[in-house]
Image (cartoon, rainbow, N blue to C red; front, top):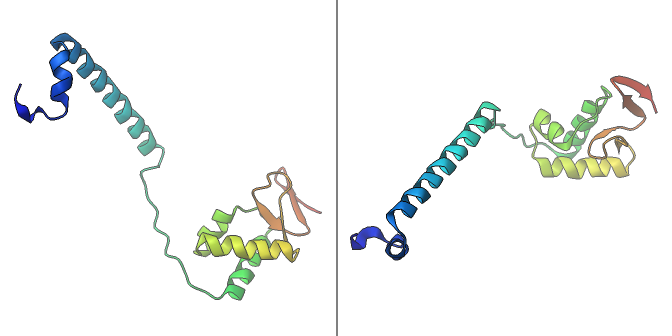
Length: 130
C-alpha cells in the first residue's frame, strides 16, 4: 500500500484482505439501502420543493385576513394559515395567540394543535354551533 491511503492505512495494516472485502460488501449493502430510502422519500414528494413568496402586510390587515379564513368554519393549523396567506409563520402564530386571548378564535379541543373561529365547532365533517 502507498502512503496516499490516508487514515485507513493504519487500519489496513492489521486487517486481512478477506476482512476488508467483507467490510466493503457491508458498506456497499448499506449504501444500496440508503439509496433505496432516498428514492422512497423522492417518490413520496419530499424531493419537490415549493417556493412561497411571502407578503409583507400590516399586522392589523393580517389579523383580519386570518379571521376571514376562519369564517368558513374550517379548522386550520398555523402552517395552513401562513401558507394560504403567504405570511411568515412566526407573525401568524403571534397574531393567532392574540386572537385567542381576545377570544375571537380558539384552540380546537379535538386536536389542541389547530385553531378555529370561536363559536364554531367542526365534528366529523359537520359544522355545529358551539
